[in-house]
Image (tube, rainbow, N blue to C red; front, side):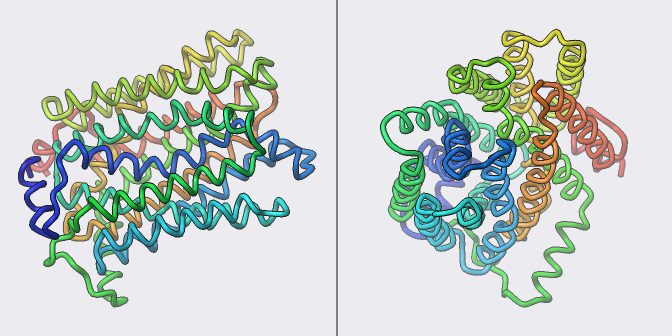
Length: 418
């Protein structure tokens, strides 16, 4: 579907009109609700651990894990009901809950209560998985991959600036005010969706929420080889990102003894991913999702294996860590958006259920992977590098199964032969 066709379809559905550029930014900002709630609070993890008297600072990583676990499980709910009631109403409900839950996290009186509300915050943030369904409603194939890449560029600005925002807030106010900022951000996005986003779900694709219909849609999502194994590939790649996010504050504080450099270096690595995502958006329609993402994956594996060797033989320093981690994140810019588009590509008729199941599997699974790697932190960068390399190799296995053990094959060639 062309950009013009997509805009026309949106406009006709509700009488509203939203331009292509505004659409991209809005989708990216909705997705950024998830990232902001993690990245902006990274500088606050030691402060929160101290405030609640945590003797093991590794436990502070559960603040990230609880949120991401809620994010994964919540996606089962939001995407499915969006196939019945439409995308717009679900987004508005979820964003409202996001704003309320953020405030309740900030009011928590114990670490257990904080984790509980943090889980609910993640469940609410999961509503923005519907943004993927909105994109799938309007685009398909390589054009969908291009749109996902362009939104990813805007989305990646949040990780670039969020840690610095978080650190600035901590200089001016107690850590609880971070969650006030999250709530305000959610309210702003809620108003933008209310005023500008039309309904994108085609009437003929609305599902009746019966057990039989949901089970049939689930069977379609999980029974499709491309959908299932690219979802698993997303899981392991996202797990490596969450491991990095959970450990990065400790690495700069305990390995390099330069905690003040974390926001800037984190931004540099995220910026690398943003630049490569832009490159991906420019080449993916011409070269194809599979070739681009598979090249990116092979480079990712090579970089993380090199990083593992550097860390294992005690050659790691701050410059090598930043360079190798930036290269790792750059590879992810070629991988994640394309994998997500390929997983969704066969799911046009059940996009909401597909986004829910794929999002639940990839996010909840990634939370477990990231938590497992994060708990291995031992005062060095080796657990992170080795964990990322292992995730890369597992991802390659999933891609090989999805592509019937052949790489660099355009999709139409596979269909013709299979």
